[in-house]
Image (cartoon, rainbow, N blue to C red; front, side):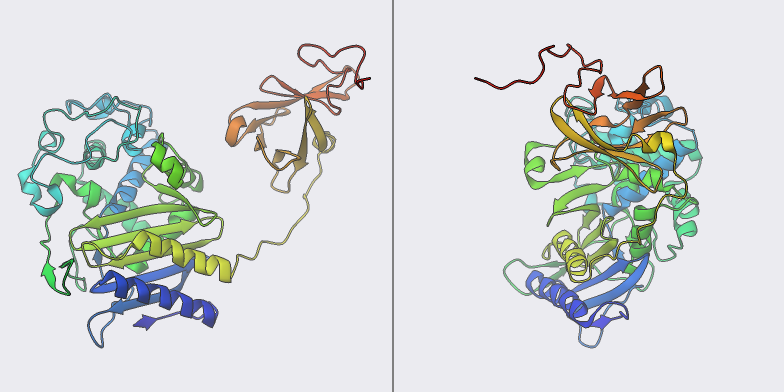
Length: 461
């Protein structure tokens, strides 16, 4: 076992070590390595191994499988941010002749393009990519299994198409673009398409005996954008910081936030499980917190990248076995251990730098019909409208500069909020997407839709 951590409390460190030790022992993994990130840097690293006197450190490569998809999605979002394409564009506009071109780029990113989960046999993860040299070999004769845009159906060929899109637009191989535009700016010097020593070997563990079988290591060829990459806990920790905060050299904070936003209709079972999918990122509601990131697997390897943006904690877990430890569960547990044992200390409260009296007079209690709401003016320049009951529709609003505000989330996302004033300049009511908010329930002095009974409120006698 190896550990490196100066900032976490001893009890927290022991709980982390215990969790990965149980995962490696019960999951019968030849090795398991993990890292925890807090405050933008690694605060703990641990490893367990079946080899006496040796433990992989933060620089040992493991294959990360479908975490590769998140890297590919970053490249596509870069193209969007540059104005080269729009996520609503059909693939055909930029990569014609695939037979799956009616799917939009956003639908491919969110796995709602209607494509099959896998390429035609033989199974692509355990056979050479040279068997599928063309996109047609990856997609098969009938690429679409479902109506485009109607259903979330995880698709590896969909990310092959996105990788091909990047190559078409950039005029360079996917791996080269990834290295130039993501690896180098973020300092991911130990992430690569081919294994670089030191790296772990991939193993299958016999289900009924403590015996090992080496797994083949294949170059996935065309399928590389779906699962080719090798990386380390050190590099994936840095990638986790980027996915939480953004980096203007690669993608802005706003764009990575968009990646973390649900973009696909969930299956009924996913709703029950609290799972969703964004643009190249998985989302999971677990232990009362929202976790984002991605899992990955290829024969011989398991990988998980888990981030709680709210808690400012992320975890990376890598193992070199085909099955065994549930690394996504382990990652979620590592985040929970730190978040609960050492909760994030909030930034100090600070008042507004300047007070706009025309906005300040809107603060306080409002009513939509008989529903009570509070409008607050916050130090970040936003206004927040939330139900007094604590449950129901709520949103923050950003000023447009013309006396109106636009909703940023939830039911009111994109909706316009404006204060309607009387001739004397006093505020009559708030108008939010045709909803009238008044200072009193059904204020007879405001233009309440449908009018207000002239006899007013009454009892029953």
